[in-house]
Picture 1 (cartoon, rainbow, N blue to C red):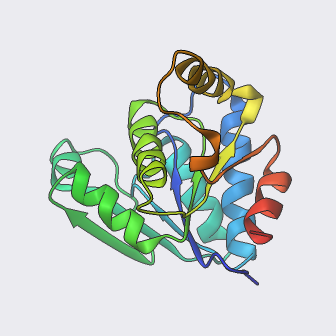
Picture 2 (picture 1 turned 120 degrees about the vertical axis):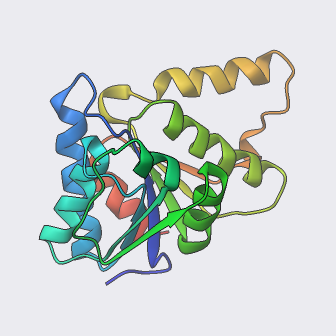
Amino acid sequence: MAGKLKSVAVYCGHQFGCDAAYARDAAQIGEMLAKSGIRIVFGGGNVGLMGTVANAALNAGGHVTGITTHDVVAKQEPMHDNLNQFEIVNGVNERKQKMFELSDGFIILPGGTGTLNELTDIMTMQQIGETNKPLFFMNTKNFWAPFARLLIHMQDCGFFVRPEDYNMHTAQTPDELIQKVLNY
């Protein structure tokens, strides 16, 4: 069963990306979280990596909560209709706040600008001391390596990016990631 972390928000793409390994790892993580008794909070979509994580968790008997916005629904993007909980909120900022409130930590899979936005919001909150909830990066095929280099570059250029301000953990495999989550 789950340790300290009872629920995690999973931030990831609503597309599959260019490598089948992204979906493979997303499915394994969804299944492993469910089997570990850790609830998942995610963006509510039934497409791409989002849908992959949710479906794998649900198929393994997990609890999955989707949070989306009225604008996403208005665009008729495919929403997941088989979740344990589903909520539609007014906008992206309210969605991020709701996901933050419902989660003890955050798993970051490959994704686009939405994933990056969610990630950097949590990092900023960590940096200024608003939260110490952990971030767990699934570094499938070194997806997050350029981001890590960018953080080092920012620090080297004299900007306020100090590793000690962040509660970040990186894994190269789903097994390693789940172990870090369970042992947190």
